[in-house]
Image 1 (cartoon, one colour):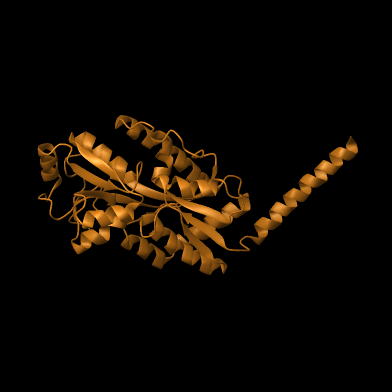
Image 2 (image 1 turned 180 degrees about the vertical axis):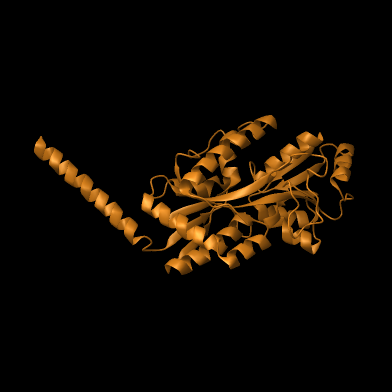
Length: 322
């Protein structure tokens, strides 16, 4: 019996030493960073900016792997089922924490099947219209929607995205009947909006900002409580008659559950360093985002609190799991 216990203790010690050695060597090979949305969208832009810097810092290849589908769940599920060694990670949008409120069958546990590494950035949404729509303010949009109930659709980057929920909050408060039109990511939604296939778009400044600047879309309001630098002429929804309205999309970095603590700490610290570089901050300010950051523990707490918050919004909007 004593001999068996001794052998077990030695085996456990050997496993611990191997895990420690792997953590010390990290990263020793390419890192696969999954983007669960199509190329060209907000998540893709953020990941490619940080991924390039991460690869340079560690002298390893960071492979950006776009795996869209099922409102981000296909790519995210790939990571949930990957080896917990820190070599496969995923950047999720805030829609990740709302999926249990919208879908009966989510292939993973939103919190427990992942290691929360860091919260990256956030960006408020624009409420935009195609220039052909005869409205130039939120008040005029509401009047048009009431005159044409059920006929105005707003493009969103997937069910459960921040722009979807922002739209649901807005339509409820404004007492209008407008219809969400889900796409497999923000980029295809924006393409149809600037092409005039859909009359409205609710999307982050990161995605919609360039089209607003070029005049291909008209921004009627921003969903943050303060006007956004660079778009000072766009009023807030708070100013437009909806006091306290505040909705932003955010992006975080996850890995599968069980990644060694040392690896998580290294990833968190290196990404925090990158996000605080002057050129990176300037780049993210340019595309309409601001850095959040924090420790892995703070990331976990943030994910859990956002999950509770948006579940309440979904319930208030009458959204039910399908």
